[in-house]
Length: 163
Image (cartoon, rainbow, N blue to C red):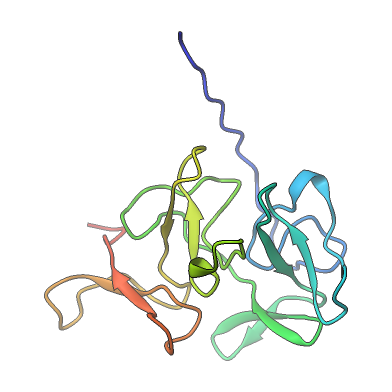
């Protein structure tokens, strides 16, 4: 039996991302065409991003630079909202409908890291944080920050995007 998988490429809109949009602060499309809104918890705006409980914060104000990082307000929280990577740390391309970002799921081990789905079978990989470059520097192996901050396991080895 032959199986055909069709990938639909979506163009991720440029800034700004605001409440009422269909894209999250992490640049993931809201599930089923839903809009970002404050549901159940008035402290932040969010939407579901998949049918297994995954969700992400949404911006309630324009995405602007705070220092050298693009951030937006999401109720009482501040969220990263800039451009995202297209490859995971192993060099696999992210699905165009689920780019690298901080996406929240029922699997809490990923909640504070940048990651993306790499295929339609829900396989995923960590991504370098937007502010980090995969490089050796003074070390023997290339690495980058993958965490939202550096207080948790915030780094991992990676495959540089440009050989």
